[in-house]
Length: 149
Image (tube, rainbow, N blue to C red; front, side, top):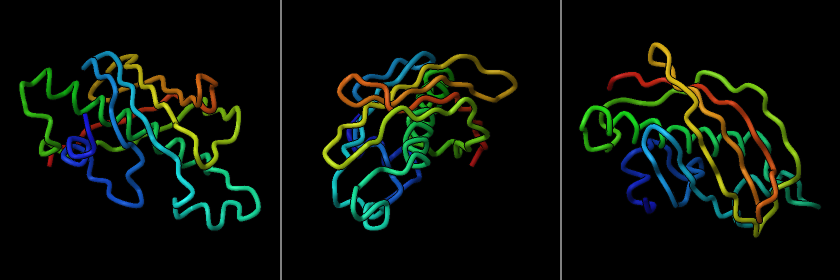
C-alpha cells in the first residue's frame, strides 16, 4: 500500500498520519509498515529542542494506525468489501503492556509491525512492535473496534 491507499483507508491527515507505506499485509494475520521520521515533524520543535526525540505516545499512535490498517484489510477480506475505509471508523480501545526500549530520532526509519492475536465480539487484539534498524524501540498490545459509518 502506498500513501494514497493509506489515505483511502485511514481518516488521519497531516500532521497526525503516522504511516508512510505498508510493505506487507496478510489480512487476518499481520502487517508491516514504515514511518520515515524527519526533522521536519512538528513535534520536534518542542520535544526536545536540544535533543530531538519522537514522543512515545506518537510511536504508540503509529502502531495503532498500523493495527487499524490491518483491521480494515482483515474486515474487507472477510466481507468482500473494497477496504476503502467507507465501512466505518476504527477506534482505539486500549493499549496494554506498552514498553519503550530506546529513543527514536530524526533520520530513523520506524518499522511498524502488527500481529493479529484474536477477535472477540468485534474487538480486535494485536501484538505490535516498532523497530529501527532491527532494534526494538517500542512494543504494545493494542485493542480496537470498528463502528459502522
